[in-house]
View (cartoon, rainbow, N blue to C red):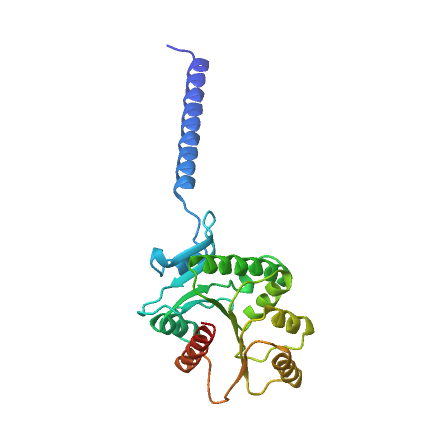
Length: 266
């Protein structure tokens, strides 16, 4: 019979082999799990999944960042293109202004492009860095819209997107045929630099503000009207109108203004 020492050695070797085998199996399982586990989709990717692929344009296709949604013209006549840059976190699926604009304007002869602006709390850096990053995205989106056809290109900026737009036109020449500024809430329009940059665009300007604007904003708008060499229209939103619940009213007004600009330049 084998000695007790030999039996003990055999037993320990068996335990060792079992231990090594279990470690190898566990490692293989971990590798298999890690290779099959996919990262969670970003908010932009989740939003994009609600649209047909042909409507989704990524500013960075490799990383799927910078979401631009195209709502194509469905009317027999094509008037032009409009880049809509709205409140951070808002989409064209949420009932209200953005949804109505993306539905109504294409049926009236416009190609509408909606640039999604991430919410501030979804971004990692400071608010200043966020402004810079989104300004770059806005410029990329504008270039895509400009290159999509030879029709006239307009831009609509709403609420907190207005600041990024002012930052964009301050940093570089911007090629557009008109701008619509929609401030459905009180904003500071007292910057002389922003005023000068808007005038330098030499394009028609359409501004929406609440009826109860500050004296500084009123003065700023009066100066803009006096100094602008292009058509300038200021519409004070009546107190009994809400930009979202009365979105059809505003969509029709915006269409009328845009159509007037395209016809007057022909």
